[in-house]
Image 1 (cartoon, one colour):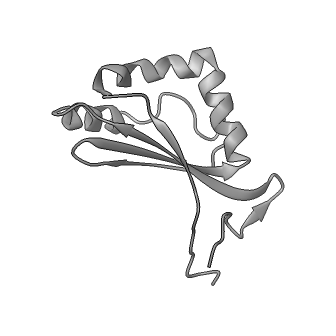
Image 2 (cartoon, rainbow, N blue to C red):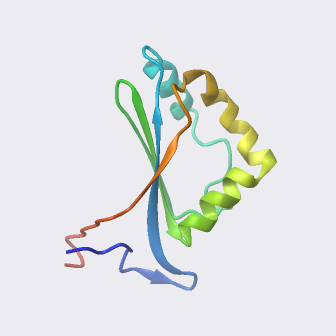
Image 3 (spheres, one colour):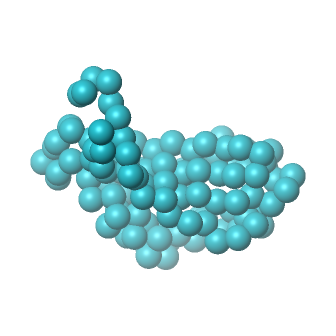
Length: 112
């Protein structure tokens, strides 16, 4: 089953998901966890997102964004100087530039 969007529709269209994957410098996971604990540096709802999760591993951070028109929402976020300036706190923790991972498969037990 390949379902690239959430079946739940709202007035703006179906929810979509995208992940931003960042490689952390060795030993920086605890500092990354402290940044995550502070919460997002901008209002997620105002930015148009429906859901947001952050996953941390020893040397990886994965930021999952969900909402209708997700490609445009994430592009708007990165291109907004005021909101994207808050990402600078992550700079010293990253081993390289983050990459975008687009959803290729999604399964929801409630819909299928």
